[in-house]
Image (cartoon, rainbow, N blue to C red):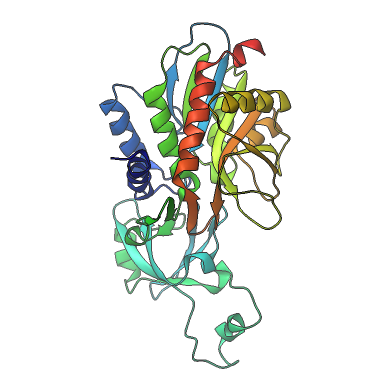
Amino acid sequence: MRDDDALFEAISELVMCHSPSGREMEIDVFLTARFQQMGLRLEKDASENLIVKFPGSGRGSIAITAHKDEIAAIVRAIEPDGRLRVRKLGGSFPWVYGEGVVDLLGSRQCISGILSFGSRHVSHASPQFVHKETKPLLWEDAWIETKLSVQEIEEAGVTIGTRMVVGRHRKKPFRLRDHIASYTLDNKASVAALVELARRIENPVSDIYLVFSSKEEVGAIGANYFAQRHHLDALVALEIAPIAPEYAIADDRPVLLAEDSNALYDSYLNEGISRLAESRSISLQMAALSGFGSDGSIATKYGNVGRAACLAFPTQNTHGYEIARLDVIAQCVDVLEALSQSDLCANF
């Protein structure tokens, strides 16, 4: 199997694991089993981060994170006719999902419903008419049709606070030549990259923590919890980078962030990562983003880590049906492998 084929398959398996923020059990079970197969043990902390540590032979410590949660919605009301109303959890938008099957992760059973916006063959007498021409569609305008009674919904363990995600059968990734297209590449592709990185780490100089962080989409809660409790010389988040007209981001090489909406990234750490990339004949591009945050910048903002960086792969349609180049995701793994073998953090 070619490397890009293997990476496509690895990402595909992870995409099919539902993991809305705070309800990440499916992907936890998957990753725990995968690491057991690799002869490595994942630890889970109180914030539900999954962590594997590779002790170093020298000085320094670094955390490399990939968040395992995905954007979603959360049930806010159950109506007498069995319709559910939801609000966003993370950066989700109803028009991105479109009308179609969604899964509701009840405590006893997963049930499916149809995300609905109402009929289009209507006049101004119907409230949804304005969405045809003038008004953006918001979660307040949408509902989930279940055709179940309130009792049946309750028996499934679906309550206020239950998470809603895109229906599993809609999530299967699609191959576009050397690209992968899918929901939740943010951040299942980074999780797949970190699993591959774990296979490669041998005899690091500094202590390396690989952290599959929880609840990133709702404020990097897991990464902040982890960084508060460990003395880290650096934290590097592996992420997506949005391709958009306002950013000069090409899709053919990894991105290193200079800043985002939450913080400046550390220039010395960025310079070191750039040199390590060059040693692998990988050219990085720099970007400054708005409307974006990562485990690294948010942990920096709250004073839980002194130096942070964010390495990312360029992605179209972020927080939607995302598209990214498989070879660039693989290059991110190569850069992080070089980082794991270096003494960069030992010298801070």
